[in-house]
Image (cartoon, rainbow, N blue to C red; front, side, top):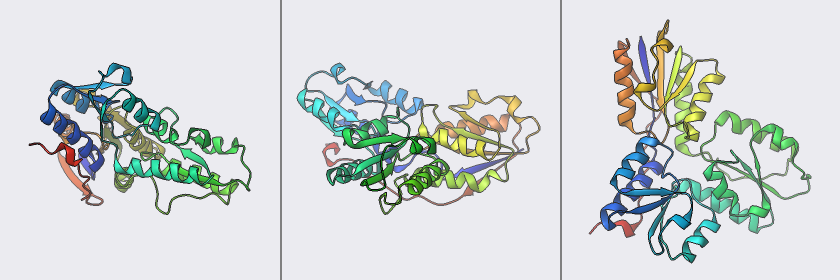
Length: 308
């Protein structure tokens, strides 16, 4: 068997920054440091930070008055920020800069009288945060079928934007439906799906024609990891989302000649390497890197976290 390793894969700049913020906060101020929601959607990352003294919460009532609170990479709504200030919490923002860009656009266009059409998964924490920028002027759509149900006319001022971790295929279908029904609809000059999500999907597309099986290393709660698995499945290639080597089943490899492997943007490379080692144990004899592009994006941590 041959194993094709898709590149880029794994950690993106926003994830690296978010993890670094938690680690530096623990280093500077000591435990406990509270984090609103999982800092990124990956069990391995969360457990490691939890062991170091990070406490992950959903309800700000669980944070002691005056404690330090880090916002996860997915962002939060203005209501959460207001509650934190009311509780006297010291806020540290690990929101990915690309998510912040989406928040800012939603807020800006809502202030100009536009209704915001937000493309994404209703229950995803990123969408909840973005919709919170203008809740009375925002409608969430998940599919072309949702577009058909929208109550607006071609005279209404409409603006659409997307969750940063969606599938390029799915977004194309929804945006096509929006533009067809509402020719006047506006959006940002550049796509709001983040560069890392796009690169990982395009890199995987490069190898799908050569593979009999695709394995995506990522957490089941990770949106971008799930989209990678779906990308392969839609091309009628058997695909599995795994969160570690112990989840690989030998039966998947029966009569398989070429395996494609990638990883979601919140997956540590160490976990990927463990999966590669397991595949070698199960019969892989050749491993090849397939590089789609090289990423050199870096997001800086807040200056307040400089450790003295």
